[in-house]
Length: 403
Image (cartoon, rainbow, N blue to C red; front, side, top):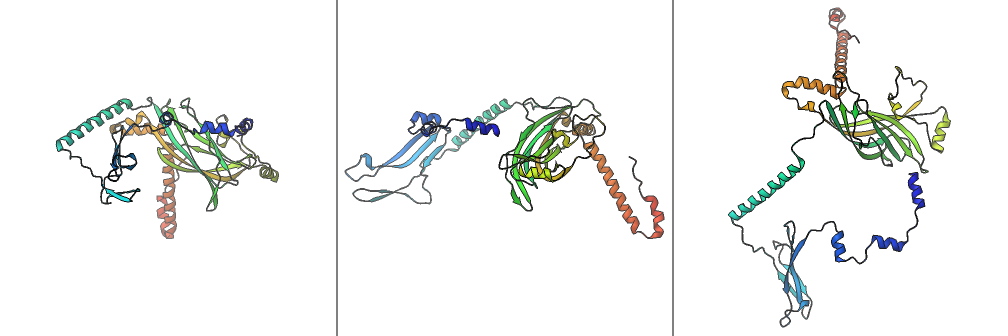
């Protein structure tokens, strides 16, 4: 934005007369109009005229009137104006002259009806024409569907940053980028980062909401090297910033989002946090002169990719919970493993589990949660039993699983 402002200051003023001459052509020629119009479909026009002059003055041009205009364009579309007379009644033309005369006329379609044989022949010609056009389009597209390489998963994400809500200041914008773990790749021209527009907030209920509706598209490839290894899924890092009247920015929150491992439409609301300094001086500086503590590396929102140790300590790092950001993600997955037939469904499921990332882990978690819920229900039932039956039902209680 600073560079844009500097460029605007360096521009030379443009005189109004030269600006008008460049933008507006006051006397365009017919050739200029024909060449500069976007839609330039050739049209043939025919006029049906009526000589409405008094007796003795027939054939004079001033008494000629246009009764109907028929246009035929290059696509074979016929336009009749005014339309054929229907139930509305006749058309009227008032002629001013020696006597004020009112003429009424009707327009009817007097063409002979098409014979059934000719109509069938015309329909057959149209079907052949449409069939040739369909074959031509199929030849342009081809019959081979574009497939990824064997052992490769293509992940296509149509995303949208929908809104940000619950932040302290107005005029918010979001900076985001996508980190690809090992064995993931993308095309050289794929953009993995972006910045939304600056958006003012509006009061919705108890929160101030900024609606961005900012779309982005990402296409990634995962290449499987080890059949027993589970891949790390790409992570979307983002930070929410606010802009004040003096074009100074403040960090409003940091957050991260692991892309969904299952295809489909996902609405996700991610809470954010921001670092805070010690004492009131940092908040006063943030309010009066802008600026706030911020991360030099956004990957420290989660476990950074450069971290090689066993324990990551954030002791003494003070943070504050702020608002949240809502994402809409439409995920598509493509792999040759999806083409397995129903006889190899079990084997295909194992391949998809390996490509799907966290599906195996999530299934284990679901089993453990179901076991814990069943155990709690049995404990509640045990407490409601009489005391003399507790000893007999104690052996039926399941024991906790070993880690």
